[in-house]
Image (cartoon, rainbow, N blue to C red):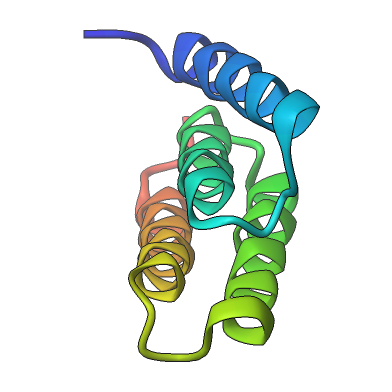
Amino acid sequence: MSTPAERVHDATRRLLTLLEEGESTTPEAIAPRAELAEATAEAGQLEDAYYQADEPLKDARREHGDEHEATARARAAVETVEAIARRARSAPQG
């Protein structure tokens, strides 16, 4: 199993490759953007993760509508980031 930092790195590389070939709002690009947001949250960078999750959701809604699978994936990333943030807030401070 990969670490959050490895997931951030892998998602970033996949996203950069996709962006070299196309737009950031395609369904193929929304998925790694969402994954990057989740991995960033898992790595403890919650402020960045909120932004990274919110932007693909806005893009997916604008480009594909609320019912598209890319929008559902982006919405799931927002929910995942929020869940990670809740866990982080409720974790004992050591």
